[in-house]
Amino acid sequence: MLTLLLVGLPAVTALTTGLLAVLVSPWWWCAAGPALLLAAVASYDLLQRRHSILRNYPLLGHLRFAMETIRPEVQQYFIERNVDGAPFDRDTRSIVYERAKGTDAEDPFGTELELDRPGTDYLVPSMSPRPVPTRPPRVRIGGPDCARPYDMALLNVSAMSFGSLSDRAVRALNEGARRGGFAHDTGEGGISEHHLAPGGDLVWEIGTGYFGCRTEDGDFDPRRFAEKAALDQVACVLLKISQGAKPGIGGVLPGSKVSREIAAVRGVPEGRTVISPPYHRVYRTPRELVRFVGRMRELAGGKPVGFKLCVGSRREFLAVCKAMLEEDVTPDFIVVDGAEGGTGAAPLEFADTVGLPLTEGLTTVHRSLVGTGLRDRIRIGASGKVATGGDIVKRLIQGADYTNSARAMMFALGCVQAQRCHTNTCPVGVATQDPRRARALDVEDKAARVQRFQEATVKSALQIMAAMGVDGPDGLTPSMLLRRVDPDTVRSHADLYTPLEAGQLLTSASVPSSWAGDWKAAHPDRFTPR
Image 1 (spheres, rainbow, N blue to C red):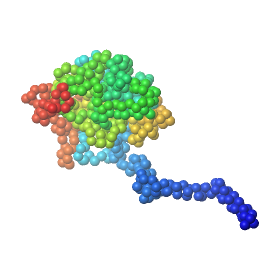
Image 2 (image 1 turned 120 degrees about the horizontal axis):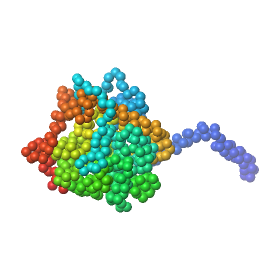
Image 3 (image 1 turned 120 degrees about the vertical axis):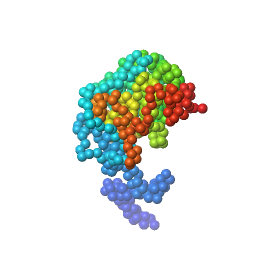
Image 4 (image 1 turned 45 degrees about the vertical axis):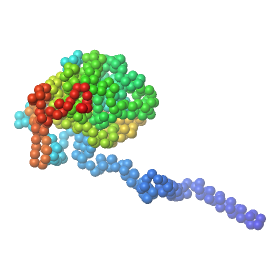
């Protein structure tokens, strides 16, 4: 036995040495390593309980998830037509890119749209066009109680907060606004140094979190509000009641995103989760809302004050109108946000089903103010998928005095509609707080693009109005916008949305039957009728 052991020991030693040499050999790992890795992955797939596909199809099932990951890019770049993409189709994105770059935005060989599809709108050209104005018109914002009115451009930067957008994106937007002479809505995230440094005019938006003017427990702080509203760059103040992307719900800013800078801007503790409630603490009734608007104007030193909402109930808005009449207090402007959504991330159910689209919301607000005799005291801004000159003209016809744009301004910054705004992984540095990603955005270059886009788009709107035979927005009427309602019928917006006469709702005998129920039920001291 001892002899066998002595004889066999060298053989075992040689075999072990040989095996070790093979295992440490890079050639062995090149050949066997991938096989072992695949075997490990397959074993994991069979044992895990989360994905049924992987349990039934180990290894191969991963192809399904890989294809799902790149599906948006494949869809956008290889499958969809120029007029198919959503929320903005390729043609719309292209015209924004071209105008922002200052390149030719002409399109040869005719439209790709199906103009006979129901729901299509048409602007009416005139047989006697007018010369195109050399200077774009401005809209005076400021009612009878406003001591410091502001002249608003036809197209402005809509609400996007610092925190949602990168610091470089905010600076580029504000620098573009300064160069082009238009306004920049801060979003509800407060006024940051990035809003102030370039010097562009600001519309300070205040939401339910009262960021930048809040007490420690999250209530409205009049002293802090007055200090910020007194800043020279703050041209107007806007109270956000609701937004198109998610009307009626608040928001949560995770503590991991509350950096020292964002905490200082918003007036909240660093690193602590911040909750914006779905409701305001400063009012509960239409009358309280109207009174608070008046109080904000006093605290702001007479600067224009307004509110923004995504319209839902006509009855509720009429209740606000009744409160305005009884209190003799009106906002200087109202911004109507469409349920088409915007830059804010929202639950799919809210984005798809809650709130009125901009056309219905805008016409509701405009006609309500006309019918109550308040329209001449209040200017209306329209916010919702405004990207072209045609969009501006359409909204002016429907009752707006001016327009705001968020996503088109993001396109001007270089946004590629990756729809990753809420993931902090924006590929072009627009909607991210990742410094590595944000550094890709050159402020000087993008500011010039924002300015060029706004200028070219307003010029396009003026060209369209001239082709329609009017010298400016004051000449537009609802009869100049047509809609195909079915394959055989085209009707004007004057027929689809019957206009009210000034003060028509104030005389009971003249209230249209279609408005009578809502007007009777609307009460200045409650939003919900009894």
